[in-house]
Image (cartoon, rainbow, N blue to C red):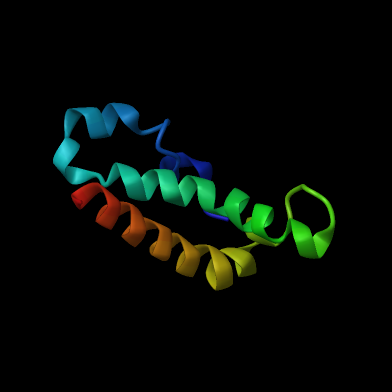
Length: 81
């Protein structure tokens, strides 16, 4: 899982408020939430909530990044409409 700083949007809010054109806030939000989203999707397989595959390095590479990109694309398309 990526380090919380500087990937978490709340910790760099002062930077994107100062330079709003330099940061993609939707990407920051999706990136921060993806480990939890992956674990929520896999709760059916695991049978319990908690930090699982979505919070591992392999889970981020295999599931988090591809699903995050799909969610990010979907958010961008939804906002443009």
